[in-house]
Amino acid sequence: MSGSPPIFSFLVVVDSDVLLGIIRSFLEAYGIRYYIHNEHFSYLWPGARICLYNQRWICVETAQREEAQEILSAHGLFPLPQVFYKPSLITAIRNILEILLIGWIVPGNRSKAYQGDEGDGEGWGSSLDIGH
Image (cartoon, rainbow, N blue to C red; front, side):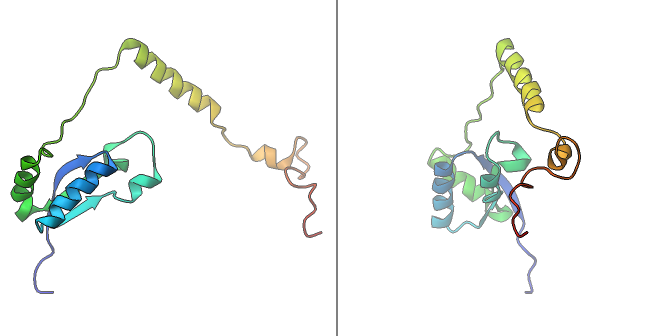
């Protein structure tokens, strides 16, 4: 390995599997080296998309970045439209209430449940007598 490793630079953030497949196909067809950050990890953490946490980023080799932008622009895939919205007051209040309720619903430390009500060491599963 005489050469230095390739340096990849950010190209676009992709939210849908279909769009990821289309962009990947174009990059492969034109021989552009790419890397998808969080490609498989993003499936482990579904839910709200957080940029550095579970969104998929397509990165291309820095030397081929302009070529990749031109190819995707020719097919209407670059730049991808970013949708930003300002939530209404009702939506903001609802989001705050959901956070408070979910924080309340999710159980905390349940170590007492394993010891039983009296703390005598007999809790869940003690009546099964498995292996005794």
